[in-house]
Image (cartoon, rainbow, N blue to C red):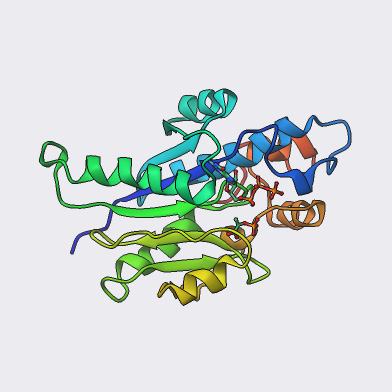
Length: 227
Ligand SMILES: Nc1nc2c(ncn2[C@@H]2O[C@H](COP(=O)(O)OP(=O)(O)OP(=O)(O)O)[C@@H](O)[C@H]2O)c(=O)[nH]1
Ligand SMILES: C=C(OP(=O)(O)O)C(=O)O
C-alpha cells in the first residue's frame, strides 16, 4: 500500500455559541475572536500536514467559513442545529462521495474527524497518528483520546469503514464501546484540546499556533514555531 491520503473533517460550531467554558479566559479579547483563533490554528496545522489531502470544515458560521476557506480548507455548510456528530456525518458523506467518484481517482477515502480546539497542534504529531492508522490493523476505527483521557480529539477510519462518530461527554468510552481502538502515541499537542482557561495555559506551554498566540501574546506568530 502507498501512503494513505487523508480527508480530515473539522467541525466548527457557530462562534457565538462555541467554547462556552472558555468565555472570559482572555480578558479584553472578544470571545468569538478566541474561538475563531483556536479553529484557525487547528485547521492551519492540519493543512500543513503532508498526509492530509484535504481539510473539510463543517460550519454554519460565515466568519469561520471565510477564514478557513482563505487558508485553503474546503467548507461544507452545517445543517442548522443538527449537532456535532450529525455535522461530522454530513462532512464524511461529502468526503466519501467525492472520494468514491471514479472521476476523482475512485480508490476510497481515508477519513478522520478532528476537533477544532487544538491550538497547539503540530502537523508532525497529526501525521504520526494518521500514519499509525494507515499502517495498523486493517478495517478498524482508531481514536486519540484527549489529555484528560475522557474525550476524543481524533477519530479515523480506513476506506469502507463507517466513521460512526460518537463525540460528546465521555466520548473516549463511547468510541471504545463502539469498537474503535485507541491509538497509544504520546502526541501532547494532538491531545491538548482547549475547553477551559487552564487548558489554554497548558496549550501555551506546548506552543500555540500563530492565531491564538497573537491573541494571548504568549507565543509570537511566525515561522519559528517547530512543527
Ligand atoms: N459544526 C458543528 N461543530 C460543533 C457543534 N458542536 C460542537 N462542535 C465542534 O466540535 C468540537 C468539540 O466540541 P466542544 O469541545 O464540546 O466545543 P464547544 O461545544 O464549542 O464547547 P463548550 O460550549 O464549552 O461545550 C469543537 O470543534 C466545536 O466547534 C455543532 O453543532 N456543529
Ligand atoms: C466533544 C468532545 O469534546 P469535549 O469533551 O472536550 O467537550 C469530545 O471529547 O468528544
